[in-house]
Image (cartoon, rainbow, N blue to C red):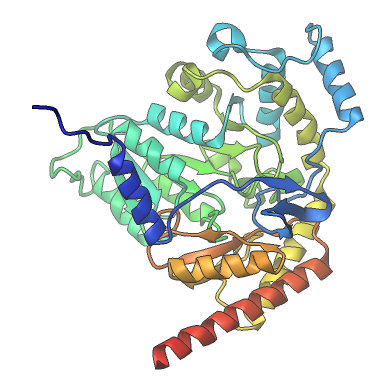
Length: 424
């Protein structure tokens, strides 16, 4: 009897079809960046309100940039600009540019040492899974980035999620896991002495634009003898003296044990770093699997980031413009009665509720010349689909006002259609 022929990828087709049916199918669209915060996408010229390049630093290499790169690499002993690391940095991939970048970033963050990773995702996953293991516990804001969640899962530690910025709930959880308090673990047993407690939080939450209560977090971590790790991905370069981050802006940087940040957002490059005490960094070199077993950041990019660090530190005017323009855009939306959440940062979400409504508004915005991407679950909680707007320092006020007018017009038209549909 002949075996019945089946398509072994049927389950994929079914899942993708279901995602398309529910409005959650993701796909890639080629984008070409233009000057003054514009882009080409799908044949349309759009105002780019969807990127993380907050400071609007030049995204293209100039001849002067290339000459500076060659000089930096040759002065370190290389015959030219090396494109790739060629290996894990523990084998043959540790370039002088990596070492210099880490030294400069440690000084910038006011920590003893720093370790550069290839991306923010790699930094969070590797660091968290190295710091805690089975029977340890991580306390994480419910709206933390997926890379934090994945790092906790891979660590196999207990995962205590607290409601967004709810310090009362966090303290209850810390008490439960503290010797001398009510130390009952998730499994119903008394945790052993020596259980590591790690508190992790974004500094600025990427999809809400809200800020973590960092002063309260450091107080609680000290009260309950926990480690505190703060993800400065969306606040680095944007807050603090010379763009040093929200921890510095609030004066708590020395009380935060571990600061992570990226070069792919305000810095406009790629890569990430972890800054901490020297012992922590030396431990991560040995225990962070996403560092040990990963090809190093290209030396060319490490050299570029060193140049970009100097630009970020000198970008006080761009930071001021970014915050002013984000406030301008938010005020235009809220004045029209639109819901932009509880944040007051440079990230401006437009909360729309359903996936279908967010997709409809996003498509209408593209037709009107505005890039505003629909953000849907699981990136955000169920029922909170939105458009996430991110103005840049280089956007012109007139462009932002026009974009805001289009947002208001499109949302009102959609609201009218929703009302008429309910009446019918």
